[in-house]
Image 1: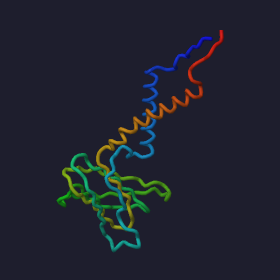
Image 2 (image 1 turned 90 degrees about the vertical axis):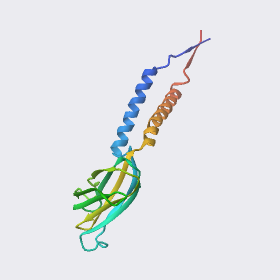
Image 3 (image 1 turned 60 degrees about the horizontal axis):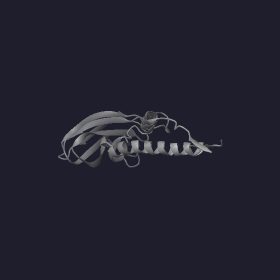
Image 4 (image 1 turned 90 degrees about the horizontal axis):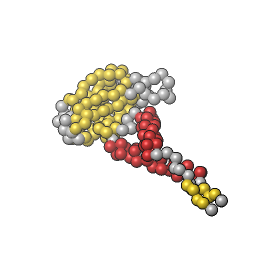
Length: 187
């Protein structure tokens, strides 16, 4: 009786290529689901008021958040129920000085079940402290707000590790289906 081993399919190059392709597919998939997947979220909330709670216009709502100096803020606004026109967006630093002051429209697709059209505002972060985001409106309505600052390093580290684990599991499953890699031949 002789025991022969089948040659292992693939080489180091093939394994590396599969790893890179899987990593690219995972990255594209994550970014398609959530464009801010690799951004570090530091605050989120609803701004504005519903019709029943809104005072005479114009009115303003504020949101505060703590942040460190360094990477610029990325602030995403999306109208919740209806579009909001001529909305004034102000970002104040910890001293109360205005960093960003602009007037924009927060639009919404005609289909109520559709996702809002996001407005993105970038603003510098010069120092540590509590920042204030103010939204001044001429009409009642709410906006969803997400604030990001810098990359989400943890996700950037764990995604390649997750891809390696997936390849390892797929390799174990493939080997289990094809046997243990040994063939027994009788002479």
